[in-house]
Length: 184
Image (tube, rainbow, N blue to C red):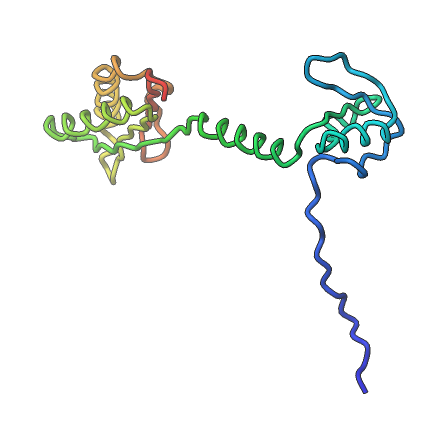
């Protein structure tokens, strides 16, 4: 003989729709908005009949309004267009990328020029550059050399970017932030 299980059975929840459509609209009266016409307040049942006549759906656009605002439209097409707009908005957002360039307090001129070329390229691409001088061991006594190096970098990059943060010592690092003048 089988004992009854104490476990709850898995029940799949229906994906909750973003908008109420047709029979899911429980308000007695709604404000029907149509293209090229004035908004009309009418009974929900009448609006559903109008939508059925046109083979479309009655969709609740603004549920918090009094009475709720609804439109007659093709719901699947409406969702498709909304997703398309969201995707377009997302693609237009610019992502700020932070690129780091590391120096030592005794960086040679050739190394400086090499890293300067990279910094210019990063700023031209619209990225932010975080330049820092890393002090190892007793090289911390050369703080002034590190600051001079970063200020020289900033001077070389003034055509490509704007200093966001002046050189500042944080632990064993002296950090400077440069933001691109060019927007993506």
